[in-house]
Image (cartoon, rainbow, N blue to C red; front, side):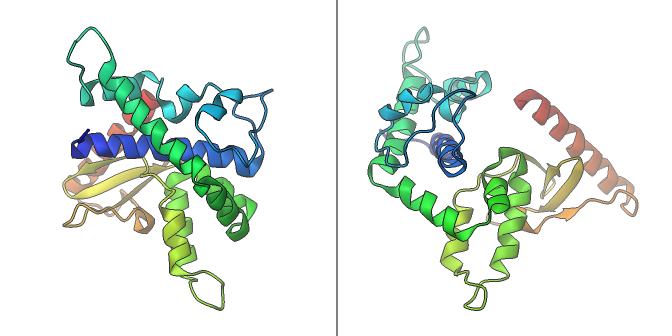
Length: 229
């Protein structure tokens, strides 16, 4: 099946989210739910995850917001069924299965555990600290070289495990919240957003239009965070 760009982005984001949840469980030895069991690091298939959690819920695939987006992106031929959403979920879970079966998950676990300190691992895999994690990787990138032990490829590999933070774009700038602090940066010509190079928005010295834009972004972000929980 050939997916549109938006469908590909959705599948990639959900696949990444599942990988992050699995990596967090594996590296921190924390079960998916209280009282559950931690899957063995040698697990090799998506179906095996069902022994340790309801694997169909991973990546938020059963969350109302996600299913609403999926229904809009993957409409079924028959409006009374959810075939389109199911096909998308199968594609996402299939991609995770390949990641597990190929041993790539074990490679990622080993790579992260060897390269990062426990607090850095926590930051990398915490969905509420995504913007902070982008900044952390920028700091690591500044220390690339033999003297510090970081190779450019290593930082790039870590960055590939990071999603975009929840953000809004207004008039050529992106805005995100780091805790309660409003962070902003420019959207580049190729639509790239350098989330690791944002700056704290200080309303004081801004002109009226810029202050109005920042306040609008802040309100949109609060609404976004409230809706998504």
